Each structure stands twice: as structure tokens, then as C-alpha cells.
Length: 231
Image (cartoon, rainbow, N blue to C red; front, side, top):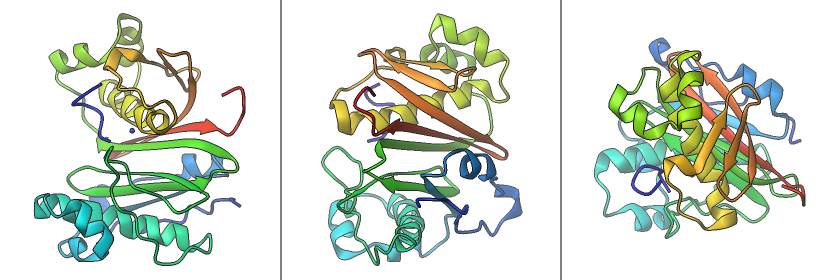
């Protein structure tokens, strides 16, 4: 999925940075209730969020436009709030060479943003091997892009889902983020197949990934690889 994927308690009490614009209200209740090992939060991206970047983070993002630094800063504000509930204070999350953030020891996580909102998910690596999240506006992809993303088997399922093409895209993005640190493989869109009914992704190497979704004004997809030797 080269060029398309961005690089892919713990009881949770739906600890999140509230969005200040109700037009961007995102309900994470489904994720909070179904994934008790995960902490998840979301925040509206605001002017000045770029100033939240710590020195180590800024060094890995200084070549980016201010808008990208702002989105990255917002995502890290959310992540640091979640990590603080685990007793990890003021953690720096610099960008790795793969593009994914470098998490504190013992933690797995993922960050994502669109033009308006930033989201973070974190968990313990004693229970979870891989996490991935993606957030997208709740609108369908254009038909030509949707055809590039969906496998023949997925196309019928997409029609049955609200904003199905965007949900499919977000699920594949989240899956890539969850598995790339484990498998170190670059994937094309058709290397990941989504089963909405089972809420599961199958990667071309045979790996199965659990999926959860939230659909409101935005589409959120979360991918989870449990810490199971069979996973």
C-alpha cells in the first residue's frame, strides 16, 4: 500500500480530549466498551498545537509544513494525556524512520489525524502486540478511488456500510499501522482484505487483525493484534 498508508487497566473510561466544535463530535463509546484494554482519545486540531511538540519530536518533524506539525502536535497532546493515566508523564514521541511514533517502553500505540481532528490509541505490550488507528471525514471515496482500494470480494460489502468506501480505506490504513512494526512489510491495498461482518482484516501473509469502528461525523477504524503467540 505504498504511498497510501501513512507510516499503519488497562480498563478504559473513554478518556479523551473533548472536541470543542460539536460539528466534529465523535462518539468513541463503542470502542471504549468493546476494547477494555485500550485507551483512546480525540481532539480538535487548533492553532498553536504545533507548539506542543517537544524538542525531540520537533527535530523529527522540522522539515514538515506548519499544518503538519500542528496536526502532529495535536495527536501528541492526546497521546500524552492517555499515557499520563498509565503513570507515564510528559513522554516524548518522536517520529521513527518508518513514520510511526516511537512509544515508551512497554507501550504500543498509534496516532492519526485528518484536517480537523487528531486521535490517539495506546495500550500495554504485555497484552497487545500491535495497534493501528485511522480517522477520516464521513464521506465516500470517489468511485474510481474506491475501485482501487476494494478487492472484488469487498465491493459488495462496501455498498452495505454507511460511508462504506471510506470505512474500508480507514480499516486498511489502521491495519497497516498495526502490522507493519511486526512484519516490516510494505503492503498494497489488495494485500489487506476486510471482513466487515467478522470485524476482521486478513493480511496477505496470513495474519488476522481485529477491527472496531465508529461512524459519526467522522469514520474511525481501530486495528488490534492481541499478544497471543498464535496471532
